[in-house]
Image 1 (cartoon, rainbow, N blue to C red):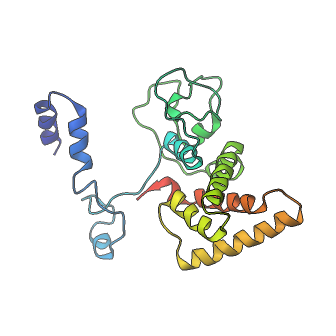
Image 2: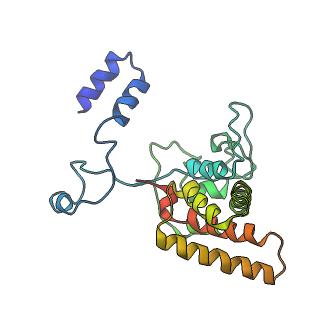
Image 3: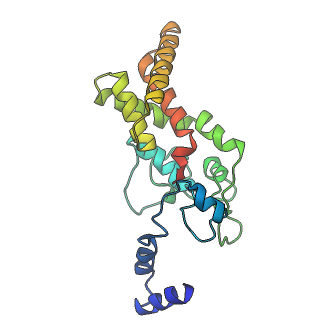
Length: 222
């Protein structure tokens, strides 16, 4: 296989894009990650590539996805970078300063800036969950998403709920998820009303969006 790919690289004038296209359009690359008991019994380690191995998004993609959800992602290309973690440009434009690294990027295994990196790890640690729960920028972006959903659906919690699932998980909620999420929204909105918070429905929907992006389903490619 490696000999074949090397030959393809040469025949395409040493250009990588045609090689990348051939790989991502291959049957092996485009497989689902759905389990198969019979195949698992034969090849539990997936050595023969009978399924796609789920992989976590990289730090830049996670941050960009959150910005895209809020509608705040600045897609402008080129120009100076920034050290501001709340900057709305794509994460590739975040400035790397060794004495002032951005915590959200570090916690999701952004490359170590002190030495060259041939690859980056994909760790699973508690602070990753805490980013979605406590990071003020994440909450700000999700509140914006909630406000946009309510505005689009004329303050209908049920329609906004469905759109929240589609926006964050790229699917509609199951019947049980719909029931549980609606109960959660009503309970949260009632609590916000009791504490005399402004926009209780918006805050409740923001809470739900925060729950959804905290799921593995949001940051793993299947």
